[in-house]
Image 1: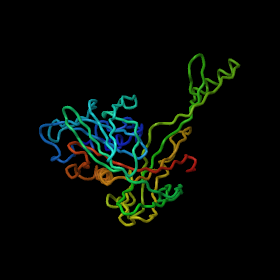
Image 2: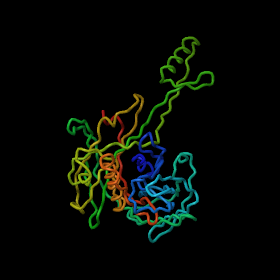
Image 3: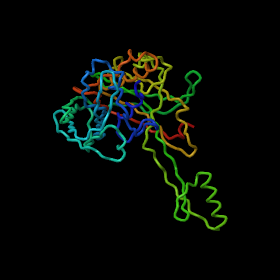
Image 4: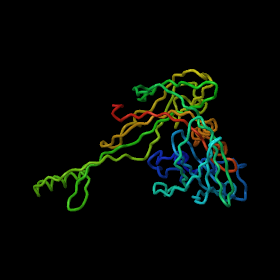
Length: 368
C-alpha cells in the first residue's frame, strides 16, 4: 500500500513550512517522497538490483534563498518497499545561467532534525526571469542534474475576500485579474494557506509558570489573589506557529486545468491555469476557500490566511498537475492504473521547479 499522499507537500517548500499539522515537520516527505518513488511507481522506473538513487524535491522562488531537500531512495526488490534516508555527504551546486555558481551547505538546524531528507541551503537570493541549473553529486550514487527557469515578474489586481455559496456550502471567494506577459507561455497556480497566531497569557508563582487561560490556571490565579492578598502580574506573548496549513480550494472557471482532473465542484490543493487563451492580455478569474476551513480551532487563536498566486515553469507546472491527478485517482482506481508523476531530475527522482510568487495576507477578522 502506498504511503500517505500528503508527504509530497511537506518537502516542497522551505520555510519551516509544514503543510498540515499532523505532518508538519514531518515537514516533508517522511516515509517517503513516495510520490515519486512509491510502490505505485511504474515498473520501468526501477530495476531488480535495488539500486539507490538521489531524490530532490525543490522549488526555487524569486526573492527567496536556496532550500534544497536531498534524500536517498532504496528499492529492496521490484515492487517492494522503499526506504528513504538522509544523505549528508552530497555536493549541491546551483548555477545561474551566464552567471555565478553557489555551493550549498548542509543545514543541521533543529527544525529539520526529524526529516528523512537532508536540507541544503545558501544565502543568495534567486532572480526572476532567470534560468538556474542544479547539480547534486554523491560519491557512491553519482550525479543528478536539472534545469529550471524562474518566470518573469507579473502583476495581479488587488484581491479581497467575499462571502458566497457553492451549492449549499459557504465559501469565501477571491476574485482577481492576471496581467499576463506576452510573447511567452505562462503557467499559473493559485493556493490558500492558513497560519495560526495564538496569544499565550501566563503568570509565575513560586518559580513555576502557569497558563492563565486554562481552567486550572485561572482557578489557581484567583485562589492566590484571595488567599495571599497579592496581585500577580499576567504576562502575554503572541506565538506565531511556523506551520502553514494548506487549505482546500475550488474553482468555477472552466478554463482551468482542474476541469481535466475532476469536476468543478471538487476541491483541490491548487488551481491551475495556462495563458494559452489570453497570452499577453488580462484575464479575470476567481477561486474559493470553504468557510469552515477558515475558522479557528481554539477561541484564543488568531492568525492569517495567505493567498498565493504563482507563475511557475512548465516542468514544475506539469509535475504539480500530475500530482493533483494522482491524488484525485487515489482510492478510486486500482493501484495498477495509477502512476506517480515524473519529474525533471536527470538520473534521479523528483523535481526542481522555479516560481515567481505574489501573495496577500488577511487576518481572521476579515472573514467575520
